[in-house]
Image (tube, rainbow over all chains, first blue to last red; front, side, top):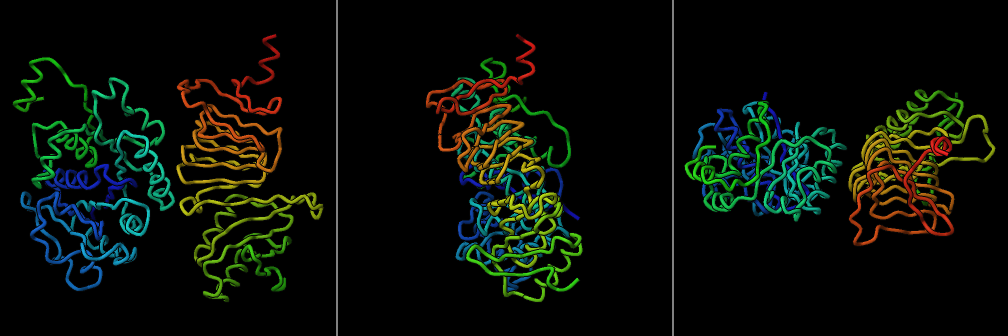
Length: 264
Length: 229
């Protein structure tokens, strides 16, 4: 029996899909059997970020409505034999699937896979309700800015109301230099308000933009700092105890050199 | 025991359930369940106001009722209870459960001495309104709201909107271990922190109306004050 984890945020654009792709791929790289489910029906992205867009035949709505078998809709990842994607439909909307259909679907996936990672759409409407319907754990993604933290807080409240307690927090797109100058909320400001366990802080990294456009999750990029942050998050999710990494940019030449050749 | 122990009446506000105060709660609950099952889907979607009359009722009882109503697609809007020892004296306390969709079943109202004790953090979008005092054991986050006819005490950081003395009681107070509300209202007075205020309180503070304006000072218990003199 696998574990079902929903990746959610409330606010759009904080990096839910990127986080889903990286956590899913990272878990697969550790050898777990993983399926990523895109529930953002009508605005699907996970397939693009994973570079699997051109392989879609059937989608989640087809499975929910019985137009195809679950196995037919699952797309095998390019990189890992043990990683799969269940894409969202692009031509329908969030109401095309009901919460009971989602629960059943996720229940079936759980039998087959070690981890079922659900990419939740922005907002708190039907799409959100569907995404969390079958979930057992939740990861809340936020950015170090007031609006994202406010929405994350609302989401945590809604998750609690649905009996999803103790969600895990990821602070995404942190700019250490700005925090240092006092121009950006730091980790502790967000942690103070949300009061849930932080499982990772991901720095703003150009490598993410590049990897997203290429359809190659950054978690596999051994030289990127964001990739390192995601690898640590993946280890924490799978139960390993890893300390939060130091995000302060070092000016020392030796460190820059190490970064260049990928040792840290 | 006749079937009159649960009487359903419609009103503009929603459905009134008049409940026999003499019957034990669990028995009453079964009777309500029976009535609701009998009405099938007819009442679905309605707001329910429960009138218990003079009775002791606990937060667990209310939570049980809420889940029962939820089963029947009903929404518990309010619970009316009068104090047992003063039955019929007309001193009625009203517990307004106004949780937005998120908080249903999560808020545990304690119908005791007109004070509502909430043992959790109120998050954005959650709201409490109560005819009496409200005590929060937790934080009140930005985007959350408390409206009370009495005093509000927050054993944590108060960062949301708070309205004490909402029915006009000028003597109401608001205290918090860290008082930094988005907006603070007492009776008809509305205040907020100055726009350029960057000072963070590091001691418990108390807000009250003095000479017609809301004043905030650090909270010092009166005995300690006396001892210091």
